[in-house]
Image (cartoon, rainbow, N blue to C red; front, side, top):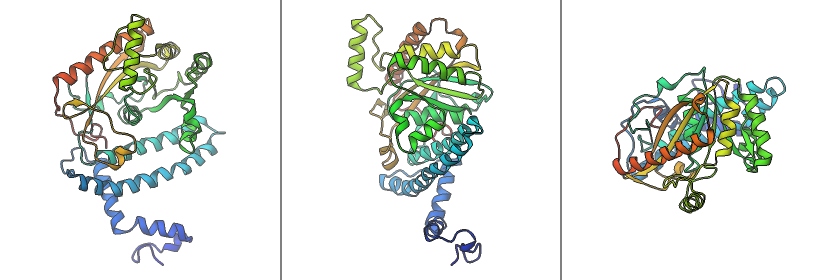
Length: 359
């Protein structure tokens, strides 16, 4: 039996029936078209031929989802190789999973981007659209990335900023339960993520030790969400009550930040290769109004009509004298930035390049 009668005999590739079915499926005309369409979305910097109707968008997503599913299954292979490399070189093991993450995020955003070439737009804090993010790619630097948290897709967006825009090996601070998730949690643990129990007495030592291990590694990024949880109307009311009760600044578009984690990280990473703090502010709008962001899986299956507007601001970590006061001031500025953006912009025109369009 042949994979392609004019090319390679199938038995030279594999001899088992499951692999035979997979290989034949991957080389079928339907799948070859999907590979072409994936590459088109993956590499096209200015794609103006995007499907618009809901039916077309869903149909175009199906082959891309199959590609993403196959690539997701490959995570088991990457994990096996990473475990084998672990006794010899932990950085090499983490690097392998970093490479996997780069292309997973690109494929994920390629699926979500179908029908919406303005999925992600980048802005300066004063609201100016960023035409190109290439100038930010300085791989000799390491960054502490601090972001607000509005939905599960934040991890995709901040991961994309760290890995694709900055060109760094990006790690996150996450809750301890995540590392026990089958396959995915194991991979994150192998990749060197920092897992905390949300108990300050237990976490303070762990954060300090983790930061001391990574502080001298170049082209790294460490992402923390200072709000500690996702934004919601219920949590916003709780945040407002807390701020009013203790005389803190009242934030209307963000949750009051938990300063202890950021303070410890900033102090632990000072005087190291982590010379810069990147403040990220994410807002999801639809039709010029702030809207509830899509879920992680729903964004893969149905069209995403809104836009993630991402404000980025670089600040030298050496400028931070009092981390607690500094972070609160930044969150007040972020809150004003969101309010100003929502009130003054209806549906801003934006760049359509591979980095900003989510390909």
